[in-house]
Amino acid sequence: MSDTPGAGSDVDDAAAGSGDASDAPDVSDRPPIEPTYSGHDDRPHLSQIQRQQTPYTESQVIMSTVKVVAPFALTFGLFVTFHGADSPGGGFQGGAIAAAVVLMIAFAFGIDATREWFTNVVVVGLAVGGVLVFGGIGLVGLVDGGTFLEYARLPIPHPVKYGMEGVEILGIAPIVAGVLVGLFFLLAAGFDDRDGAGTETEIADATTDDATTEDDR
Image (cartoon, rainbow, N blue to C red):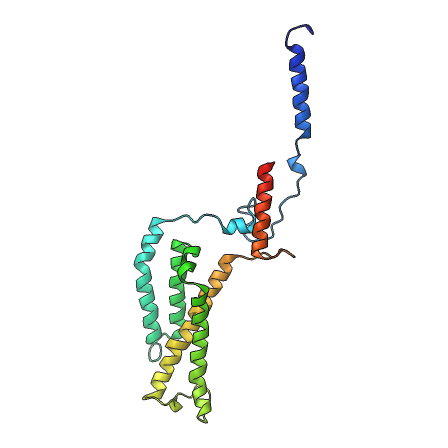
């Protein structure tokens, strides 16, 4: 039986194959990926940067609904803001509703696409501008010998009415809207709580290098 043609070559091929299998790296020996960021249990094979860069999936139903609802929601937010001085509502409620419109658009059309037109300059401008208006109106009373936010000392007709509306519309509402939208974008960007993780650029470069190494293997 040993003289059968091809039998010896088959044995050699089997031995060579077993040798190649023994040389292959054992996947079970690799250390497990530590869950150091939120969402790890859902997508453990992705790093934090890769998870944040997962392609956005459009939904025609959600997009169409937001296109219809957003104008009415923003109008309602402005109504609540403008009528807050003498009716239920105010700058806090109106600013929160306006911020919710931006969040709704971001969920429907993607956060990155929303940040292209609602940039950090706009977010910071709303918050800082509101603080300046609020502080400016409040300091007028102090300069005139009164107290902070003493509307009666404003040099305008109907100072109490217009002073309060100015604080609500131009001060508090932009501050609330800017802070809420800014916090949303900050949370959407994600965090890395690993010690010495480095900047996002460094993490992204390291992730790319790891992916390249895995492909080469």
